[in-house]
Length: 171
Image: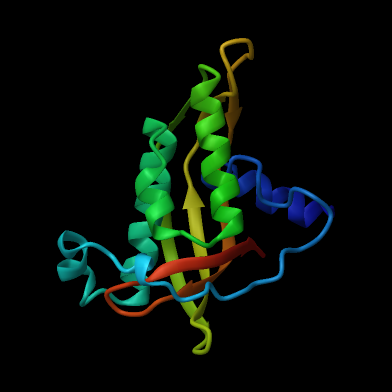
């Protein structure tokens, strides 16, 4: 992994908690399969029905931040039902809290969303993450992650009223 990629991962670590860049290969973006079970509930669909991709991406980032702070990944998982990197991130958060660890962060801010492709809906998302303290388990020492700015490539599935994240990767 090159120096630029390490810096991007370090800058976005509060968002991705070390899962970005794991393994030697870049993931291949794939669109999720359509299923009846992927539609949002009635309580979720009314505000989301008017939601633009950018508004959805900002809501996704809020779910990422909330999952890290609380250890509850259910809302995040509902927005990313077929996204493998998203599941790996949520699994890591679950693992931290299951082992008695914690995550303290000011969260991240979506600075810019730029459409790259209409089909599938693909966006480059610039995110600024705040400093984070991470304790992986009760047996580990807390460590500080500085935060910073980086860019994600996000592929969305669904559509207005039913957006989901199909895939993301650190650029």
